[in-house]
Image (cartoon, rainbow, N blue to C red; front, side):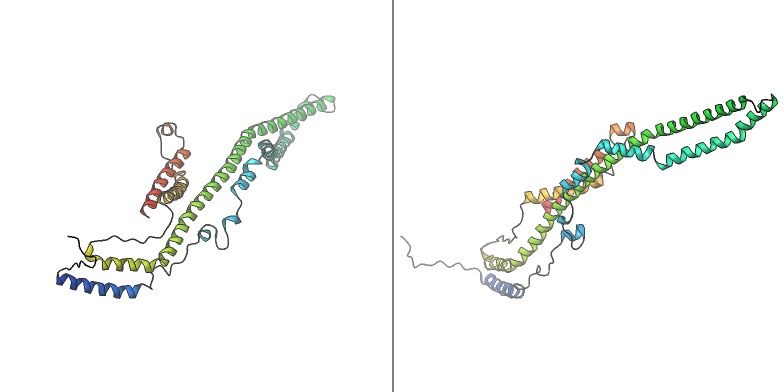
Length: 299
């Protein structure tokens, strides 16, 4: 037998359950009215990543781009001209000329105090003081002085050539490290900017959605007798994948900077006693990336 369209079905519960539910609804309505216009997120102030990185009034556009930095330190660098400049500054420096002048003064003093008096005494003993032998002897002493001085100058400059090479290599490494560090800083800034915007926009969205959040809990209270319900009002934001990538980038950047100075010993470098700065950077980046991913997943 079919039921009539006018029939209604009413579900009732035990009187003590309905009384408790009524009291619960009244209590929920009271707290709803008290909190619906009192968002806990209204007092949040946005974080400024530019102030944290650069100081007040500066932005990323206030600094040279990565390509500009590369062009200044690497792309436009003439390695031959650099070597010539360093060679001139090292081998023909004023310090080298001062050392040669000091050696020349010492030689002249030695000649005046020792060599010439011995020559004069020897010629006087053979009665040849005014003969050509004295002039020849003095010329031989002067020739010896000039040769010794030039030998000293040549050996001094020759020994400075490895210093020139070391300065040249250090200069090239310095330029390379500047560009690499600049790139790491920019990468770290971009990932930190993504994270900061995620937090700022997230709190703004939570503040706007606060009344709906309160009403969702009120709706859950109304349907409490129908069974437990799960309600969530989350602010729209970046996906979990985006947060993981951002966290991994910032973590890897920090880990690479720290790990580069604390390199773990490997079997090879432990045997040879050499440092493993590149291995330390990779190790630190791996640990930092893992921590960044874990932080992103728990956010």
